[in-house]
Length: 445
Image (cartoon, rainbow, N blue to C red; front, side, top):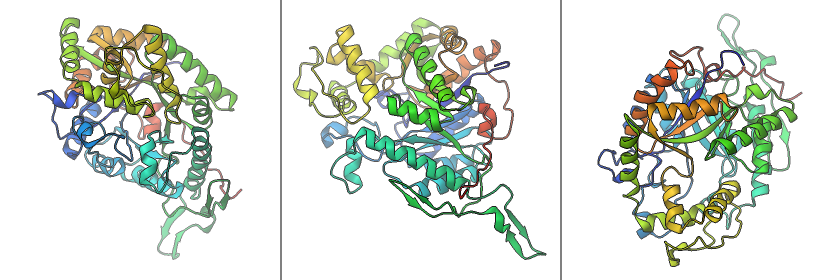
């Protein structure tokens, strides 16, 4: 694609993506709940011309004791993303604003209305990260005894996004005319009930919010399992993914692009953004010192507790020797691909529990890079030009400091190489990502 540019997303994960980052003296410890911290990070990303900032979310604490949970800031005191992004929309002008909302524990009408509202508030900068929810503890907060099976969650998720898009299309562009002289507030032929009846949902509609500036807010999806790739191929505009090297990233990129084509869509209209945790400084040695300082702050009890949770909570790892091998962990109904990748790495590389949790600690399993601005830019350029990524979701170890390091050191190098924009172009998030505005399809047709 001629003139193709990198896409960059800033993952704003409270105090940062390193599980011990909050303990560092340079990291503000109130980053989870202080809206000014989110605004500061979003403004750093906007000054650097990032496409978007992204807020992940969870509807439950991890399954652990209060004693264990008290030693980590991970998902402990988060502001609800849609609330936070609405505030951030008032303090930014151009950057995209993307929130996680679950298809397992929300209803389509809620998501459609809130996302359309955020798109109106931000004047076309909203995005929805569609998740099916992998934390089994979330079920207990929604009147359920246990988590739904992986396949069932994806079946519901597929129908969910269909209903949301129908609701977004229940208004035609320009249907609300507010013609005072004629006494007509909207065109009657510009509004349609959707009358959806499916296996999981029965929704009459229409949406009581007008068609938003982008038509459809941009849809993001992060599942890498077979059902996850199938859902992304059919519905996603952008795909977040956890890859930990150029070869697996290239293989995943080709797989998704082919799946998109097989689904009858244009692969160039789907952006694939692997997560990247950069530890960057003026020199490689200084960057390595930054990395080592954070790794030294990881409390072993926290490492074991987090590892137990991300591997599905079916085996309590606290009774095992942390310098011994990783025990056999059965498959769960959680993040199947991610869990499988972690356990494969542990087995193939002979990792101990300590080595595995330290690997996870440095960015929740994302691709990690430690080096100078030139070295980080080299990695990004190789992935971007070598068929492994359309850009990256930058997951900063500490916020706002690590994001500022990337913006100050790496972004100018990417711009110098002609890989990344100098100024924003276009008025919406879709424009920035190079995505076409979806035509309205009559939902009642």
